Length: 420
Image 1 (tube, rainbow, N blue to C red):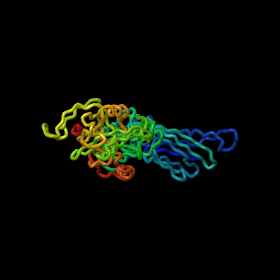
Image 2: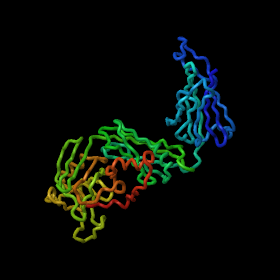
Image 3: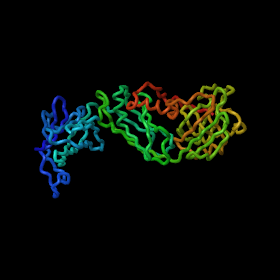
Image 4: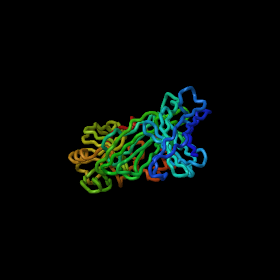
């Protein structure tokens, strides 16, 4: 006699038992059990002490499927909710038991497909539906994914801003495990916890050219911590174009622009003078502003002092929140290519700045080397993510190497001065 498997999940102190009915005779014309079509077991739901008549189960409890006796083994289990999220699980080597290893979502409808096989190789199948109870909180954990959908350069990180802080390592692992990023062509990548409410995702290398990158959250309805459940998140889709990398050698007073690793332009520039040195390292284009009024007072230079300035600046490409740009500097054309005279920005002629402005997009790479300035910080002044070694980046993941304390994001409203 075949013994059908059963599905159970615990509701408070009770048990929900889904008994898969006894196997029917396999049907098929060849007589060989492996050529037979799977029988449809007569599924019967049996509930014990279910709360009220809701027939809803506790999402905090694991989903478990067991097979009675030794004459039938489970071969495969697929559990998926109505939004398409699959439940991960483990199947015992002897096929006697399957249990979920990822949490169920609250307020969700699940469909479970169970495949079995008896001692003669005859296949069986059963489909079971159930629902989970609603979350026990009115303030779900929201996730805002960024940037906005659109086309970006190959250096653009993905960001996730949480509506509430998450400090516990286990809770962080749940959050991070529910944030999905897929790239076509594929690119190895990882999330990094910037602080308790902010994560960044980047690939090991830059994104592939002409890639499509999709990010979404599976956190809705998932319990993160006591009385904290995942909420909604709007998915996003990014695309990349060509690989555009601008490398400024501050010592040589020159910027070399690469498109897909081929040099397409070389521009004489001026960078920060002593006391205002341009930051070294890899930066990412944040925005493009055709006109910016730049004033020395925004970076702490007293009005009327020798270093004071108040200038209209055109073709300004921003690379830090603190006001570092690549921009037109017609007043320093005589020094461009030979001396560093700016207050931290990379200056060039108006025609070169216009060319640069029209050829870059947010997410493109701007790298400065051989400057006497400080190193670009990873997170509090734009996207300095690429200055973090891959090993250290992965150490900031809750899924790969724990969640060490890292630098905190600074209020961007306080980091928007402009320098020339």
